[in-house]
Length: 516
Image (tube, rainbow, N blue to C red; front, side):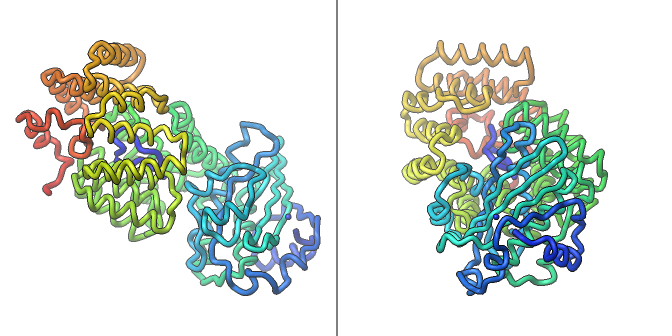
């Protein structure tokens, strides 16, 4: 299944204006930035108004917004260096005349002194926006620079000084300045997108940015923190639809990655998803979250309808499209899933998530040579990608190369339960019974400390060839609707029991699967 970013266990969403001119612009645009002070460190007129360069000639139609540099080095404010540019990306990506590199790809370019011309070539963009953030107590200083990477010419730059309460207005200002500097032709709808705010509460927005930063880190501790951050955002502004969407995603990830039982998170996730859509029915991500939720409730028909609605509202919602592709793969519709991932890659060829997902789907379609080539290509984009080594191990195992697969699964791949799941299975298939039993013992110990899905135990027993114990644990998994069950059609690791009559019977009792 899909997860908004990394694949889950079952794989079920970056230098200047004069004070007087700024005041005139602010009055015309009615942007509430009275608390900000605009400083002029350079010749703004020659940089911003001069009718030269590719921006003036209308050649710039693509942009990357890189993560900002947190020059204070304070981890407590690190979320701003990701959150502010991410919000700017969200605004600018809605402009019809401008192609904006998605956050998931642009944020891989974090080095502060990197060659922007080289980054531009890799991302295939004409312009790049970079920035620095300094936050101390309630004071906020942001310096941004927009560069034409073809000519190495600064198109616009600005230093903004204000307070933490000015973040929302600053994001809006930067997005507008960028569109003006690139001479982007704006429709009325485009202008509305630039000015649109999910909340008028600066405090709620700060909690939301912190939640998005935490959820992207994809550790149990950080996802639990994200739940707290989104909850605090909602407490500040109960009408903040995006915060409810973030809360939905956080709850689902806690179950998707095996950190909480499904029965505990589903009611909370559904309440948040329904509230998000009640507040903003046009929010594509909320429809995607509701679709994901319906997958967990084994309502595949409603899930498919919600995915299609989400992509109708926003065809460029890459995370939702990847989730939709996972849905298709889990339903056994491998070729359709591959086609959907390729749609994402057509517009974002450097997307690590899309590239690695394609590798796994090619494996699911039993196209092993293509799958391994795709893994190798993806490792060039993400050399230390833990999930890619897991996928490589799965492909090797499918070819009967179990010792090589074990070597891949023995690598640290993030979550302990996920690593043990595949490692224990591979040990069993490689005939390393004692090692597989040691994994089962470790899982048993983990289950005494916290939640471990019964489906993980079943998975390891399949590797050991102990079919009776595997089906015993699958029945336990069925009783609690373990996420592993949704991957029964897609994951080849279940092949050793696929011909057992008990397997077909189990599939028939899982209402998630639709008729092929």
